Every structure is written in structure tokens, then in C-alpha cells.
Image (cartoon, rainbow, N blue to C red; front, side, top):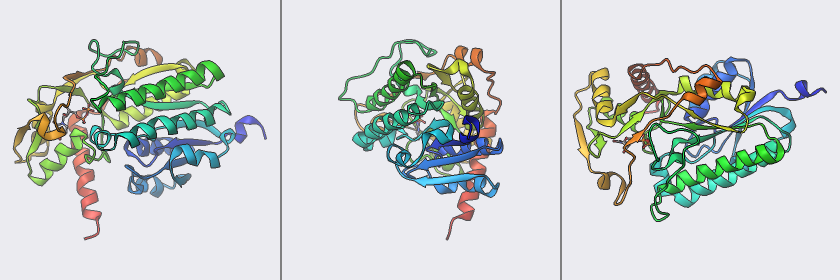
Amino acid sequence: MNDSRARQRILVTGGAGFVGSHLVGHLCSRGAAVTIIDDLSTGSLRNLVEVRDGGANLEFIEGRAGAAINGLDARSFSAVYHLAAAVGVQLVLEKTAEAVERNVIDTSSVLRWAASAGVPTLITSSSEVYGRGVRSPFREEDDVVYGPTTALRWSYACSKALDEYLALAHYHAAGLPATVVRLFNTVGPRQTGRYGMVLPRFVRSALNGQPLEVYGDGRQSRCFCDVRDVVPAIVALLESSASRGRVFNVGSDQSTSIGDLARLVVATLGSSSPVVNVPYAEAYGPGFDDLQIRQPDLTRIRETISFAPRIALTQTITDIAAQITRVAAEAPR
Ligand code: UDP
């Protein structure tokens, strides 16, 4: 069998997660056969229902990525998207050792496995890698500055930075066609607010008539990008030879303060919920270090692929609300 016929499938680790399930849907809509590895720790099979119903060519393997890949032949894959990771500040604060191990050990195994067959591989890192940041907007080649190791939140940033080192090291040492993307605040249907993410929490509260809890004074800002804009960009990056051995910011560069976000959610959904401020110490425990501004410089991605997010934040809010309402209606009573 020649190489192009042998390499038919695409591997997506974390494919039952929020970003992963949208990525799987996008790849399947382009006719790809996709193998998913997911341990369902934060992901859910429910996220794949729409993709499966569309008659996709899917194989699902339940397990930790670092172990499950040992049962697969790397030579039969044309691409690897490694998304499986511990996500969410809350989860990282609650289960720090597990989150660091998951991010570093599993990624190391997946990269070694992909490198054994030279499979083009993209890993999703995080804007957390910038730490406190030395300037704004964040550029890929900026220095990174973290708080002390006693502030556990920085362990996540550090674990993701190690993942980046590993991917880039395999690129330099073994020629692995590796691409690193640093995802900024990605939002959309299927994202769960359980692990701290702000937008699904606000939407759920607004739908339930409960207060939207803005931590701190609400002047801290983030740039929100719809997952349906992020996913095609990730695929275009993996498919671009110009992305190899490089790091890319992926997201929106339009800043919104968290206070304004709360008010936008209430207005968009016509909710009667109040917006309240909650001190950081109450929300995260003492000593939490929030970031005031998190904004990407998108020069590099724009120079490499055509990238222009299209979905308005109000549309994302409406779609998240519709998805939450749909799932609630389907849930067994
Ligand atoms: N946040 C909030 N209320 C919530 C959840 C989060 O005000 O219910 C704030 C959080 O403190 C941060 C911002 O919203 O300033 C974004 O939080 P998220 O965890 O979604 O993303 P990250 O902080 O990792 O960028």
C-alpha cells in the first residue's frame, strides 16, 4: 500500500470535549475518517451526538490519550490533533497534581508516538502560557512571567509551556511536523461552565433568572472567539507547511470587559437576572491572581492563513442559550 492510501484517518484526542467535538464535526463534514480518544473526564458523548447523527465515519476509544495511543498504528494516520488536557482554572486549582500530570505525561507520550511515524501534529496550548504577560497584546515571542510556585494557578501555565517545549523539541530533533496553537478565550455551544468558564455560566444564570456573578470589579477584559471560527483556523494551520515548528495565537482580538459581558448576556437574552459583583477571594479562595487584560496579537496567524473570525458575540450567546435549553429539554426527568 502506498503512503497516501495507508494514511487515511485523523486522530483527535479530547474529541468529546468542547473544542474537540466541534473539530471532529468539521473534519467529518470534509469527509475525513476520525478516531477519537477521550477519557470523558470533562468531555461527554453527548457532544458527539450531532456528528454521529450526520453519519460520520467515527471511531471512539475511551481512555487516557497517553495510554490509548499504544493500541494504534501511527503510520495509519494522516494528522493528529492533540487536544486532550485538563481544562479550566477551577479544575486546576482543585486537582493540581492530576492536571499537571495529565498535561505533561500524556502529551509527551502522544508526541513520541506521532514522531515515530512523522505524522503532522497540532497541539492546543493556552493563552495561560503568557502568565502575567510582559505587555499587551500578547505576541508569540514574548517573554513569559509567572507568579511563585506557591500560587498553584501558574502550574497550568507551566504545564502547557512544557507541552510546547516538547512539541518544538520533536520538531527540531526528529523533524516532527509539529504546530502549537495558543487558544485564547474560546466560546460556543457545548462549553460547560462547570470548570469556571465565564460565558456558559453567565448564560445559564440568565436563563434561570439567577444573578450573574462578576468576579472582582468586572473591569478585567477578555477577547472571546466562537469555537466555530477557531476550528477551521486550527485545521488550516495544521495543513499549512508554514506552521511547522511554530507557535500561533488563535482567537479574537476584540476586548470585552467581564462586566460588559454580563450586561450583554442579560440584554441579548432579555433576562431579568441581576448582575452582581463577587470578591475574588470568595470566588477562588484567598490569593487568586486574575489577569486584567488578555488580548492576542494576531499578526502571525493572519500572515500564515486567512483568518477573520465572523461570528458576533451576541450570536454566540444566543446559540449557547439555545443549546442549553435543548439539552435541558432532552434530559430524562
Ligand atoms: N469570571 C466571572 N464570573 C464567573 C466566571 C469567571 O466573573 O462566573 C471571570 C474570571 O475571574 C475572569 C474572566 O471571567 O476574569 C474569564 O474567566 P474564564 O475562567 O472564563 O477565563 P480565563 O480567566 O482563563 O481567561
